[in-house]
Length: 458
Image (tube, rainbow, N blue to C red; front, top):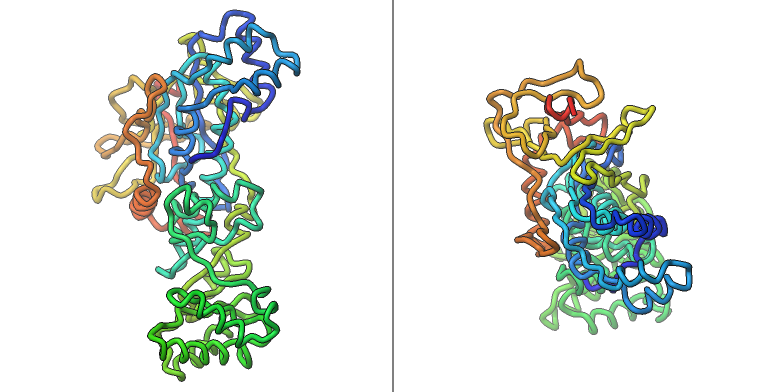
């Protein structure tokens, strides 16, 4: 990602704590943090992890510019502390679950190790990127799961929260979408882009047929006509049919029509019949307008003849949840484990550097259980519910795989996947291994996450 991000892309308290560490000569002491979340979004059964590649590439080059330091000095930060920030470069280690994998509450998704200063200063950046992209990728995966192979395009930039719409486009592709209308994101991330026309284009001409002809002439290879500006069945579709026939005579084909209002199932069936009667069976039907996984599932169940779904607001904003509650919690300092204790046991953290094992069934699919163990543990026979020691699972004889792998060592990137299409393919592969009871929308099965006895004891 080529966004210009500096060390000031953070919260004030990160810099303030960093200065306190510096004053007390703690800034170079070793520390460690875990990134995880507690609550699944959308009342669902999983989260699709996204944003890792962007995060690592930003951390690799993160620094404080001269302007940053001048600004911070004016705000009261000490000159000697700013001299330290002038030379700032992340030199720590990062371990992560692979981008595109499915993840579950409480398990460490990313572990950061380094100095107290550097591990603290990247917290806000890490949470900002991983929480948002994982939320949108999960929403996209839910939509893809009910679309039955139909083409999916992300249309959300105009309704997204500012520049976040760029990362939403990337995350949507990770989750299974085929393209975006966002040209900037398409260029940044090398993903396909697609689009049609707006109602304003037709209104500019004052004559729908003329507008259609003009657009078809300008864009003959991939022309999709918006047919609901005036009257879908009496004007829009008949005019689209006329233009399609004219295009045939010139050696071109109308790619599709788009429906953007009204009863999409009804208008799709009527439009399909009119197109087929005119010998235009090849013309596709696209639909948009406040779509989400529930609306698309309903349209599929009604057998609406829609070939392309354009999903905007509800995807790019992560509606209705709008945020993933991922957190970044201290697990060790000065080589000693650290724990946060809370009156709410669910907010008590799991100390120490850890590994996550995913249990696998005889087919290599996900067994329904992930175990959190201490990094040095080599044997796993049992896992315990982290919040109820009376609940446990025997894991003897069950195959497993390690999920946390090094992605950055001493500030240098390791061999990770950065190609968006490779991440998308991996996500699809991992979702395929997740049994359907965890992917259903209503009352999904709860994926079990437990800790080893050694971790429980610690």
